[in-house]
Length: 523
Image (cartoon, rainbow, N blue to C red; front, side, top):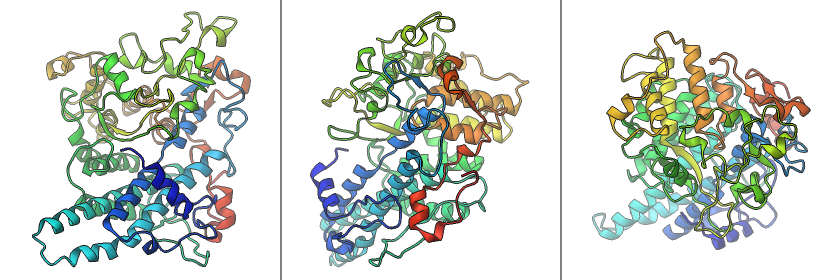
């Protein structure tokens, strides 16, 4: 979906975006606080929804995860990026930019949805006032109205879940502290203070929003609009993170097949996989955030000019990650490193390592439809993640190798397609099973964690994956290649380290008295 830049700028001027650091004190002098002063018609609601999509962002989680974990190495043109901010050296505290950004961006998104939802009932009443409910006028209006509300509820649920993912110590513990539930527009007196709720309460709220959304959204499969498929994919991810694995099997079912085909077919060629990332194909993409000229350039996290050797790369693909891809794995080619990269066969012993081994990140190679070579759509849900979640669920449910409905078979479908198998059950079944009969749950989790590392690199998962699966996989944490990290003594980090939960930002603790005393352990 293209962004309406003029609209977003206008909203910013009237104060519908906030620029304070904390999540509750979100208004500025002169701001129009009453949503009814802005949203008066169905067209206004649609414009507001367009603005919500413009605010919807996961880029900060992608940047933090890649630099803090073992996805990147310092690039040949690095000028202090990742070092000065402390991410690459595992420095994380309540004043760090990542928690401030992730906290603020998600509560900004929530605030925006709440303002539109607050105005919606009055417009809904106007629609209901149409005398003939069988008329085309009424049917079109109520369909559009419901679709707008459904998207808003689903996006609000996603933002609350994102916050839980990064700021709760244990998503499987309903009694653990979660985040603030924000389902209202703060009052004009600037004195609305909200404490952290428990995970159980936040998840209950999220599920209420998802149930509302599911009943209002249609079943279309657009990859750039929030639909029922977005809701189902979110439920699958959320169920896995919570350890509700029977639900994972249910929610992943629409996205998988025995051949890697179906509605969201897995790519099996290097060009087909690369096309997902240069935005010329969307086969396995369930939902993505469209990015056009004027939007943030995701490629600028890694390179200052372009995703090439001459594009001034200040971060590169970490050697430990690159080494995981074997020669027939389509993901190890141009979809991970740009063809202009320098791949040193003697990388382990070469004296001038950084000039002889330059692995330029190419998962965001630029969209040819845009003028900048650093802009790409942001992929939020892909069918490959659903296969990985399903395999994880089968391990947890005790079915590692036992036939078609087993972790081994589900993981084989993904691996077979990524190694060039045709889109037939016979071709996939001819590929070796990843597990043996002697495989233990720990070994299976380790394999899945490894596969997630390869498949979901630079998509914002690795930090959370280590937190969720690292201990189950045999205490697997951050594992950088030694020559990428030894000078900073930042090569490994245990999955039990407190830094795998983010701190509540200092700015929020200062501005919101209700949350003081609720900081996460270790900070």
